[in-house]
Image (tube, rainbow, N blue to C red; front, side, top):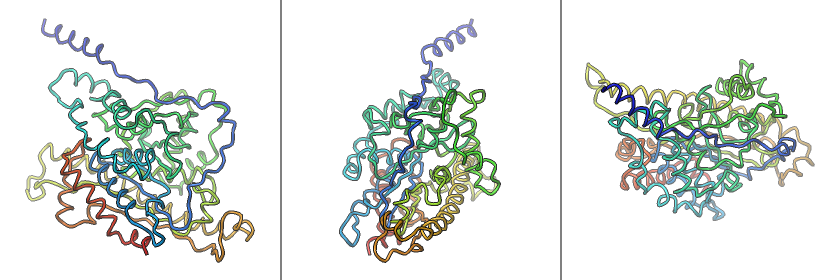
Length: 452
């Protein structure tokens, strides 16, 4: 009788709580497939900043908000805010919500983000307890929290129905997730949506951020449909070349292989997207793919961008937690929970470090390619693309730097590094994280170059 009662309870809770697995995307219209999209400018001119906002829940969202606010408040020698020099922002997980908010509202909306997102007690609305049999059922169906607890909340409370097309044209915003089947990075950007023959512009901003933030177990993966069957547009040539190029970055080869999977209906009909930090918690690996997908020496910049560029400084905004616990002082080492926590940290940190190394190599090669391409232009071609008086084809530089808690005082570093990876944090912690982001930018040597 007891077994029958438990079985009936499991059955009724399963029926009552079936997860929503509707795809978040639509097929690309035939007219859009046939049209050749014009080369899109990033708005590059002279010295430019790009940002990668790391994952880390509200800790990362708050720290990256402080970074953006400080860039808005600092000025270049001409009196213009440094945030006007930001041409690209790539975000993952907690960083993606800041990136998307900035993309939707611009610099003027930065002071409104805290009230709209960070000060709300979102954490208490989530399913977290292991006592409830309903939560066991949710877990068996793919995650403790579904769209009603993530994408629907984001749409109602934060983005208010906005679509990817509603973000401002500059800076370019890239939101990053992970394809659970292939393990490769998946970005809400054109190369990926061309691969699945889908309309990027029509995707809800809340759904994109939800995919980027869907921490495994805590949240169900976000479902995206591949419309490969009947898609008249073949995969571009770079995909096959990258997949079989033994000298290409491993991340690029794996992404190219996943693109091929998307076009094989017998292998993949649906993509199940999980937290972008699973593949790369810095969100830079997508730019390695975008560089290859451009199939030019200067891409993903436009030719005009490439001619007008003088210095590009790419900052990784790293909200990584510091090591915790006293078990390193004990011969016995960590207990069970401490061991799990340490292993999860390693599992998150290892791929992002590999992605950062691959990205650094990509930037070095990109600089050389830019110089070679610029120097191949005739004077008239260069002038037509925006080259000014005294333009030097070799005068271009790409640099990579990291902004993190380690840039701060020892005490602030220790305090911020302890902040939990959660969707809501105490207000005092948010204050400190925003102040930390401001301080790290204000004292950064590479940023200070833009003020002189």
